[in-house]
Length: 72
Length: 564
Image 1 (cartoon, helix red, strand yellow):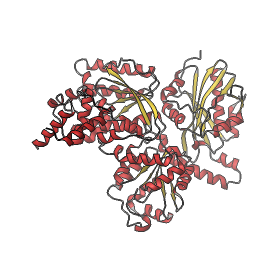
Image 2 (tube, helix red, strand yellow):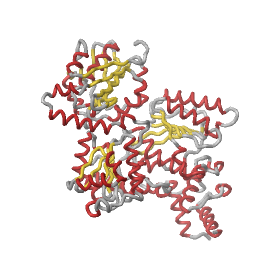
Image 3 (cartoon, rainbow over the protein chains, first blue to last red):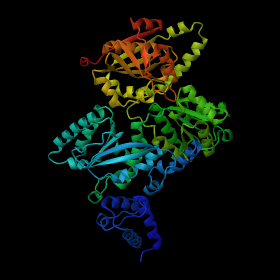
Image 4 (cartoon, rainbow over the protein chains, first blue to last red):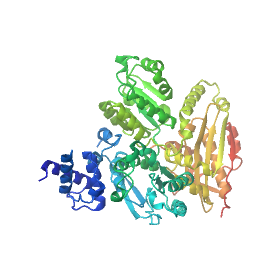
């Protein structure tokens, strides 16, 4: 189960980045790049190239960040 | 929103947009609350530039623009039809796609296509230098050559701008991200494009920076801490460096401060690190009077309009008060010296697209103008005084190497400007090359200063009439009673050259071009269609020049095709 606050923060980030009332999921490839760049900038992480294609939703991103946090 | 609200709303944005490393999410959260001018931007590209373009909006909005962006498909040959009505065409290529054995011919083809595009499009073209990956050297050579040789084509120095990022400027995950531009590099590129480069392509450059003293140029309060007590080290050194850099690029520096003028003079003569900056100020207003009045007085001395300056002051209340009174200037709230230095480096309107050799001598020219005015006041015989100035005017017809300065004069001149056409380099080039058009550039010097190019006259032939599309004369040339003579010489020559017995001067009224209208009313008659019929004098324009005591010289360098 994802941290709910983290999920909410990521959902808000996606809304700001994609500029839409309701973020579409899964995102298209260009939207995904923009979301990934914003997440990296905001959370100070560098997402591995092999992982990028798997991050297609808010839940995916929240789970990834939780995993990254746990690995520290 | 009133002017004070706009100034303070922009001030809230300044820590975000002028940041050394702007944050993507903070930028995207910004919502402009001031009016924006729509700007059509066409992007020709062969890779994913969205990571940078998606951040353009906040930077352009700070500069007062709302971008209507059209993106081409991925197109290495740039063959996609560009948007013809765009104000700015951005060409952004991934050079790695031009590598391999065909690299040379691909680069040649690219150069040819850029020349074609320049001929087809009227908007400015900005070429983004390619990151240093395979194929970049050949592509960048082509881009540099185009920017040097083609009118209104400019090179965006991507390498220089992203150099502080080191290796992280290149995206290591390029296959997944679709570009070699890293996320951090994309932010810096968007910052420089949106704040500096794109605005510089479509708006005249600012002419002056007005800067406060206490807590802005120095730490502390001069009146309380004294000359030896104020802080000039730390973050204040980069502020001085940024101001001196702008001074070297032709921007006039003005100090406006509520302080004792003697204290201010002592500060800039006794503190060694401030001496150079003190000498660079074109005007200093140190007094206890209202700041807005001081700014107005300083700019009046410099013949600069309020909308051509940025005012930097640490006090938001003072900024709001000045904005209410003056309305037109840009304002920066100097929260801390780091932000001030960044604002001086990145503020819209401060970038010189080309080396501005003439701008760099503007301060000296203004000092000469003040000297002239004082001498004229003391002169027993004003006519004899003007004669003693030994004025020399040089006029050139269709001088291709004057394109940049002619465009600048058209775009920057507000007071003596008949049409406010704001001609781009591309449009000026058409006057140089079209046999039905003429353009005359005018340079002026006297024993006190060389003012460089101070005037330009654009015209085209319409049946038997030479239509004067625009006359622009720099305000630095006014006051020596010779502008009328120089314009007359230019118009007479144009009429003869185009074979036109008649001359018409259309006039477009603007906010400040009454001086042009006043001159026009003395030399032309209003026609039924609202244009002015210029009273062409028969005979030698040199007679008038001799009367005005100006040595008038023509220099024809270019051979042009016969008039049809």
